[in-house]
Length: 292
Image (tube, rainbow, N blue to C red; front, side, top):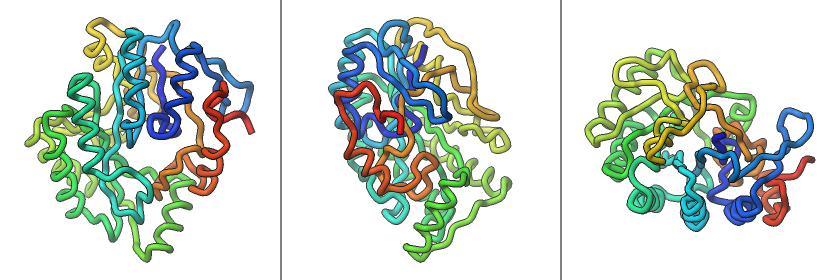
């Protein structure tokens, strides 16, 4: 079993003590976001590896050492986009993020970290030319520390539409969802920039945008985990949506619990609610967030 921690929230940035407590206990409880009874998820026995999703792994370094000492391979899916604060109110700055990624690669190896430039959002603040310049600067800062960047264009889910529209009104900017032709052209340019820095670009779950230098991503990557482990990591491909090549995993996170305030987030109803839930979080509890 692969444990995903977590595409629903940023466990490394905000919930490291809870994770360490539960890892030492051997399991955690996870409330189903779709209804039904909570699940008990093992965190050591029967676990083949971990994928950690984060924008700030600096507070999580002690936990990573404990996971490594337990002999379990892990990879970090590390988002660095460098967007203006009107779009990302509370994320770590790009300089700190790049320094942390370089430190992680030095400690755990360059295969341990995958850079995410995701989602690509086209706004008055971040037009296509801005993305090319911004992406090039980030790729240069991460050269040698990562070998892959995963990208996708923003999926405008209901929460995304509500949060992004509110941010646009407050910040006085417009945004748009480009057509597939424009997206493919933009991705080809980013792939060429990435290649100049020894980085391969892949596209997350948007098969209409793949082709040429833009392959399909495996965010839960059994091949990478096997490379890191030095042995085959078992599992099967079981994507979450069309075009997803991820390995099967069990996520231990909770929605509405990341307070970073990204305007395009699909996992948070609103920043105020996420902050409130973080304030009520019990690092000694079985649940990251108990059922409501």
